[in-house]
Image 1 (cartoon, helix red, strand yellow):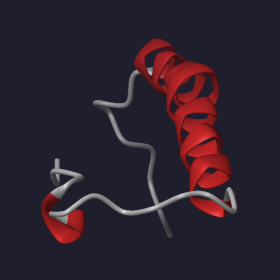
Image 2: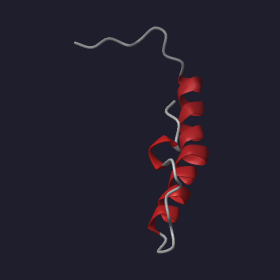
Image 3: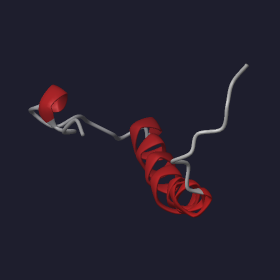
Length: 53
């Protein structure tokens, strides 16, 4: 049976959820809308334009 993680921090978890909802998801939605724009064109270094984190 699984056991609770003794290092789990509920406050840090909630902060992360809020960050995803308030920062990351709006950014991704904006990017999605830009990609779907009929006038959208990739830049010259398309594959290298979004750095991996």
